[in-house]
Image (cartoon, rainbow, N blue to C red; front, side):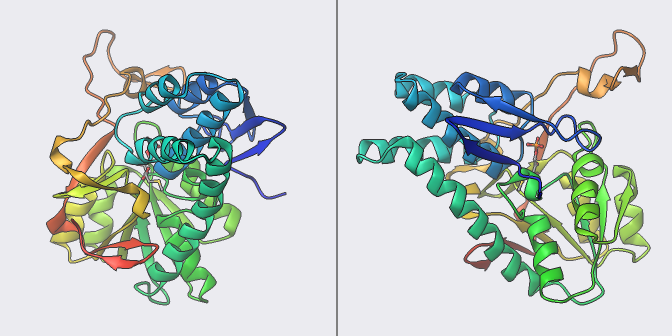
Length: 315
Ligand code: MRU
């Protein structure tokens, strides 16, 4: 059976526990909206579109339990600050409820839409990928970051589905290693040729002509640029220097038309993510850490943004 990032069954939201991948495929069941919030905070479910859809199901759980939806909406929105899909999803569910639609029906609709949206991103993205290309990606903007198919890895799948031979290079993506643990895993499952590099090797790979295109996902597209996983900025700078086209693949639900990208909150995560790999301590005791989870790629470094409606310029 194909692995699923999430599904709704018997009044519960079941989530693939991404903290355990690639070595263990286990699922967690959320019966309350607070359990979904915990899963988002601890990154059992992660990636902007997946966070959005699971937040919508969190609202459905609150509705089923007869909870105060205004309070649930505030609580769910406080789970993580950077991916705008979280706020978009909760606001959309609340608007639907006000219009007489159940939170559950709206969540199910968003679940279906996410799959269709990503396939459309894949089809448009495939047009800028040439047969034989090697695509570098950062973090995981794949099926695991969405309901299915993925955005950046949706472009990879779209090119493969269009009959193109492509290869993928994944940055490992310190400190949570979404590239090594999740993107490599996804590509291996699909039998798409994939190689893993340390984050610091991305510039070298581009300088030595080993990368034809960069495609990454986004947590927020706003005026001035795109916020995505920490390290995206350095990849974009190197791509500009070595004339490698740099694409962002993102659904319209990731667009924030109200804020400047420099005004949004960049999540700061726990120092332990940087200080440890599993139980292995990496630095002297007492080391001070900064652990921003995202950075901003300015608009002038972006070749195009691949959406479900076509390829557009940055805001
Ligand atoms: O901290 P994460 O794992 O939620 O960060 C994920 C990313 O940065 C992805 O690139 C982004 O959400 C796009 S997912 C289609």
